[in-house]
Length: 122
Image (cartoon, rainbow, N blue to C red; front, side):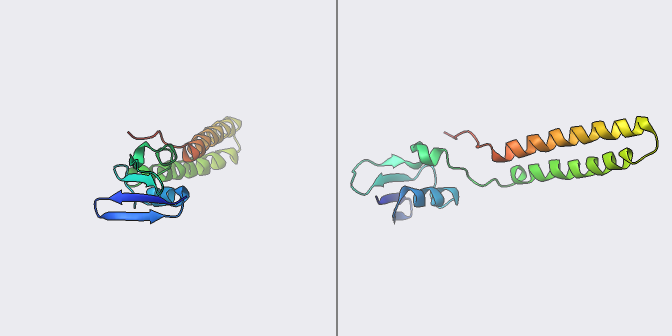
């Protein structure tokens, strides 16, 4: 089914709702733009459509770089942990193992956060 999107610049027709969703995630369709099925007369805000409300917009600014800082910190801690594990002292080896466990838990959190969808913005 075809969809019509009305923006302040004019109207665009998309072949399917999936195409509207891709345009929404790319920033071509804003949450305030109006969408309707081609056979319907009812216009709805794009942000109120469940499919578009769940669509993930690409992060920008500091939010896009936030994960890289955690990963870079984990790399540094991982190198330190490996260095400590390779030392002769057992107490330093234990500290290295604990640091490696901390790094793995941080990277697990980063991975879960990367795949979690953000809550819909109203």
